[in-house]
Image (cartoon, rainbow, N blue to C red; front, side, top):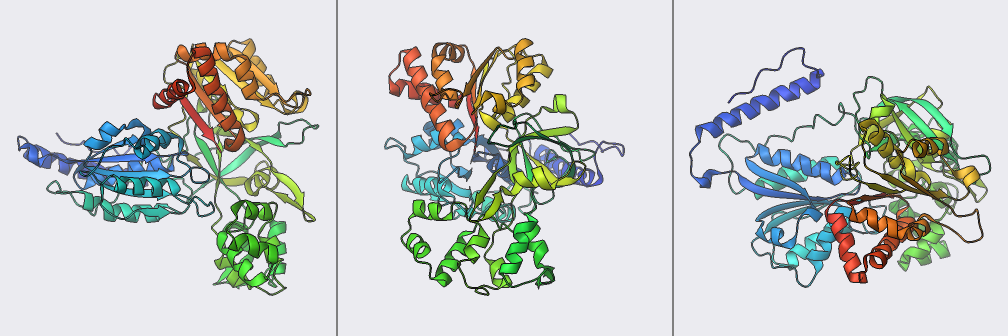
Length: 581
C-alpha cells in the first residue's frame, strides 16, 4: 500500500498542505516498514498504550489526542478513552497508562472522571502491581484545589501498587508548551521497544480540525456583527445576544462547543492602576509600554495569589494578615469579594510597590469561554453567544466582568475581537435523531440548548424535546421568548416548562418544575431520553442533580442507593451530560 500524492488544487492552505504532505510521507514509510515485516512474530507488534482523559471543557481530551499522535510516531499503539469509560477490571488488565485530567471547580473531578474515581478510591479497588503509569494534570493556580484531580489519581495509583513511568506534571492555565515537553520526555519511557524506523523525535502533528490554526495563543480577529440586549428594561440582569462573523477564517464548530473570547481590560482600571503605581502612560517595562501590558497581557481584575501574598507581607493590614496567615479560605474569599488589584494596591502607601514589581506578580490575561448558542447549520458563517454582563458597584467604583463588559461596551458592532473554538465532544446532541432529549437550562444556561434545538430542526430529527427554562421574572427575563414560542407551536419543542422565581410569593425553580412533572420525566428516561444540564454549577446544577435522584427513586420505586446507581448508568451511557460553570 502507498499513499497518493496530494493534488495542488487540494482544499488546504499552504501550512496544512505542508504538514499533510510530511505526515503522509512519514505514514507511507511506516506502512512500507510494516509490510516488510509482515508475518513477523507477535513479539514485534506495536506496544499498546492506554491514554485516558478526564475533561470538563475539552482541553484534557485534546492533550490526550496529541499524546496519541506522539505515541504512534514512536511505534506504539495508543487507545484514547474517557476515564469513566473504564471499569476496574479493564484497568487491571492495562500495563502502560497515561492519564490526562483537568480539575473542576474547587478541586473536584471533572464530570467524566467521577465514576472512575469513585471506583478507584473504593476499598474494593484492585491491586495494580503490573501497571506502569504517568499522570498529566491541568489546572489553575487561581483555585485552592490546583490540579487536585490529577494529584488524587496519581497518589491512589501508587497506593494500589502501580509504578510511575515519570513524575506527575501539574500545569497551570498556560499548559500547552509544558504538556508537550512532558509528553516528549515521558512517552519514550513508556515504550519498551520501538518499531524499526520510527523516531522518538517526531513531534505531534497539529490536528487538521483545529479550525485553521486559530487557538488561544493565535485567536482570529472576528467582526462583531450583532450586539443586542435580550433582557427587558425591568430586569436586574443584562443578558446580551452576540453574533461574530467567521468570515474567511475557516473556523468550524458544532452545537455543544464553546467559543473562547480574548478580552481587553477596562481602560479606566488600567489608568487608575498606572496612577496608583506612580507611573505614566509613557512608562515602559522591559521595553514594553506599561499601559499595553496592563490592557492586554495581564489579569488585573482578579488579584493573583502572588499579589495577595506580597501585599499582605508589605501592608501591615490586620484583617488581611489574619485571613492569609490562618489559611481561612472562606474568610479570604469574603475579604476579596468585590476587590480587584487596585484595591489591594490601595492597602499600600503611595509608591509602596513599583510598576516593575507589580507586573511580576500578575497572571497572564486569559480568554473567557462561553457556550455557543447557535448551530452552524442555521447560523452559517456566524457564531452566536448568550452572555450576562457582570456589573456591580463597590467601594466607590463601578466594576464589571472582564470579558462580558468588554463585549457589551467596548467592541462596537463592526469592530473585532479575538476568538477561537473550544471543542466539547462530551456535550453533543443525541446521535440518534429519534431519541428523546431533556434539557435544563435556566438563564444563560439556555445557550447550548438553543443550538441543540436548531440542530435538531435542521436535521429533521423526530425525537421529542423537553426544555426546562426559567429566571427571575417572566416579563423581563424570558429571553428568546419568541423563538421558544415558535418552536413550541411548530412541534419542535414537545414540552416547555417555565420557572420564574420572583413572579409569586413561593420561589419556583427549574428543579421545582422537574419534581412537579417527575412521573413524565422518569418515563422519558425509561424510553431512552438523554438528560442535559447547563448553567451555574455551585447551586443550580447541584439542586437539579438532587432532584433527578429523588424523581428516579420516587417514580422508579427505588431506594436512594438504587437511584444513585441508575444515575451512574445514565452517566456511563453518556445520557446525563452537563455543561456547568
